[in-house]
Length: 143
Image (cartoon, rainbow, N blue to C red; front, side, top):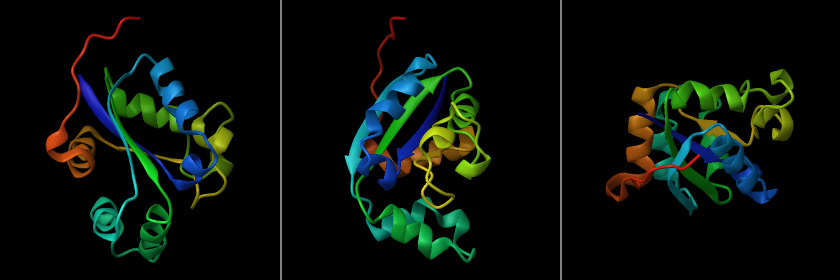
């Protein structure tokens, strides 16, 4: 089973969309195996966005993700990464189809409501970054 990290970003939390977003992913048949609300500090944000460190928007990403609480969650299931990314829609909400999370809720490319792992390898690093030794919960999902 594949795991993927999602973050409900500050704009999603502030607008009360966390439950809706988590529900949409559970409706895909994915299993929620970890969840926590936190206020990311600068160190965590910089580690999470390290791949973008040399890009001109890096500081904006860090400032935004640390501006308000976020919700980090791990979902598990067959092809979880690709299924979640499809449900999220394009990074730019203006380019996202209606019915996707960003197409329905994203405000703009900088406030697009959700982050989702882009590969199983990235997901493993991101899960470790946000959950460390806490790990995930194992159970059997009843459909």
